[in-house]
Image (tube, rainbow over all chains, first blue to last red; front, top):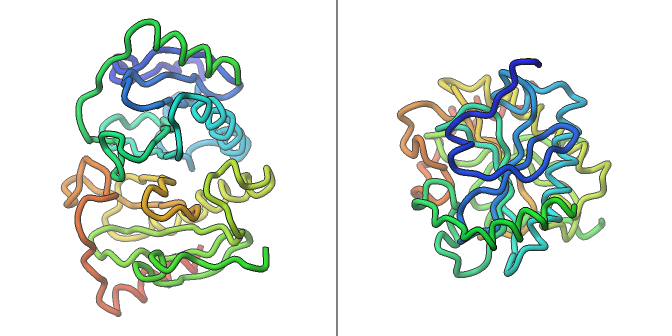
Length: 133
Length: 133
């Protein structure tokens, strides 16, 4: 596990919020959505099934924990949870807050359009919300 | 829990494959993808966080179990796992087998285009695969 590193594409699109027992937690840098990512701190993992059963259970717990943080962000009506990895194979789980009428609604946010970056104050406010969970 | 029923939209787009301890398992009726659904047999559940912690852990186990069945289908190179619910709020988890060059690649399958229904032989072959897991 010593060679764990987060994919540079993920790093370029996110801000680090906090580390939980399994995952590094990121705020995705798109102000239009309340969008966070969980990246298990395990090297070489692509699919959920590549994790041990204990880590799979922990990932689920951290999805639910992060769901609380995302739901606390303004305007969130529905959560979208997904692990795709078609572009970046390293296992990462999205937890995205959606609302009727958001730019991608009712379609998925993934691949919809280029992100609109946060201003620093909103970024820091959202990161603080995640850290409170 | 007595009033559990699967949303009619889900029923119209799928074939029932099998019931596992928590979920009803469906084959999504689109021959272009190895695409299955898990629907927890609990009434009134919209978000993963609405499940009890025990059911959340069981859902994760069934995601991994279904991942095996989907990976056994022809041509699958990558899994996409997601719970969206923007159109159908009842909690349902997609496990989708993807391959480079499939019609939606590298974007998500959700909302991409109308399904191309299975012929009965391929439908039955895929359902048998899921049941074997």
